[in-house]
Amino acid sequence: MNRAAPPAILTVAMIDGRKPWTIIAAVDRRGAIGQGGRLPWHLPDDLAHFRRTTMGHPVLMGRLTYAAIGRPLPGRENVVLSRTLVRSLLPEEVRLFAEADDVRRTYGETALFVIGGAQIFREFFPDVARLLLTVVDADTGGDVFFPAWDRTAWTLVDRRRHPRDARHAYAFSIETYVRKSCGGCGDPSGLLPALGRG
Ligand SMILES: NC(=O)c1ccc[n+]([C@@H]2O[C@H](COP(=O)([O-])OP(=O)(O)OC[C@H]3O[C@@H](n4cnc5c(N)ncnc54)[C@H](OP(=O)(O)O)[C@@H]3O)[C@@H](O)[C@H]2O)c1
Image (cartoon, rainbow, N blue to C red; front, side, top):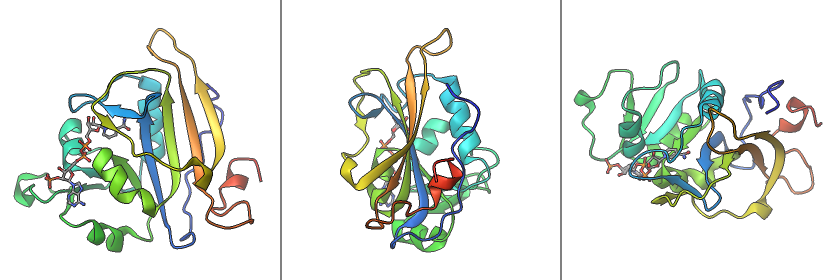
């Protein structure tokens, strides 16, 4: 894997009505993201990428993903969406919302990361300007899936490959997509210079 320059963390402006939000997800070849309430793989370098990328930013997740993680992610504002969780039973630092639109209103101008799971990816897919997808070279079965998405509406701006090795049972690629929301202007998010491609 090319470790020289991780994808730039951006504070992107509102893009054609989209928010400066990023979905960060890991999918297998068929789009599976989970199995039995957990991730279907253990890929330490992908977890390190997730930690490095999201650190210092709000992370938005559904109740089941919060339960799977089991604690607030350190160094990040943990935003949990649920209609059933009880505020008083959560750690003080967790921000709990019952309505998706309240999250949109509160964080609409913020470089927030949507971290799953499937229900949350589906709910907020139309809002985000950027996708950071780890594509795992595996077919895990899985019981929850990333939503189907129209690749023609997105530009792939970066792909970093990681081989299978002693610590990683599967090879994977970390792919960065930005939404083509700007007609012919080519760089709607201002991302490309930051990635050395401008
Ligand atoms: N590979 C990856 O990148 C990745 C990332 C994250 C998670 N995962 C996996 O994905 C699985 C979990 O995903 P999931 O889809 O089953 O669950 P989820 O999206 O994590 O959480 C679903 C819950 O979020 C709340 N919710 C969802 N939409 C809502 C809305 N519009 N308004 C209010 N609350 C809402 C509901 O909680 P209430 O029922 O409490 O109302 C719902 O039951 C696990 O296997 C996990 O390991 C994979």
